[in-house]
Length: 195
Image (cartoon, rainbow, N blue to C red; front, side, top):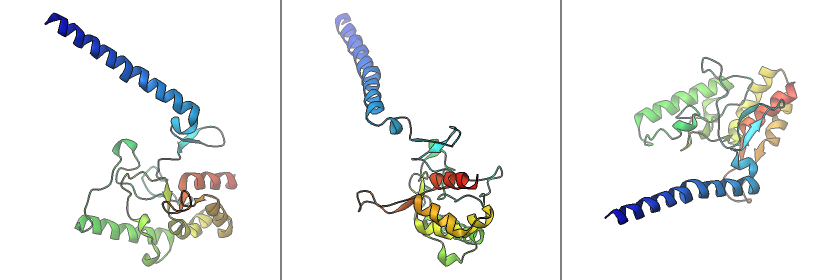
């Protein structure tokens, strides 16, 4: 029995060292060589070198009271408040009265905030993604925000539209997914252009 116990302890220690230490360190080393930016979290820095976010995780552009800042493009809604530890959707069914009321209220709020009719508000402006952390929005959602952002920054809408075009990414491999606008990249470009 003692011999079996010692063999079990040795197997546990070996598995812990190999699977808990050596393998993760090896994978981290390979990732650092193969894709250092992604291995470090795809961090995005401002002009002064300050980390301002990740290109893989959406964030809110809100004031201290949680209100959207008019000089910035707004991200998709997030069921978890753009908190990576609270990632997830609402888990409400499409027929849920709570979800329908929330979408209707968001549609009204987004239309009012951007000065557009409710019929112009795209679906991604009023629904959270499954993760609640999408870093991009549809070109249609960006388009309804152009005039508001331009007005808040005191620049021509054509200048803002040009920055939207630069931050727009096409389909992966030309056919996978949908085109999207990287909100963080776009807002940083707006800050650089505005000085």
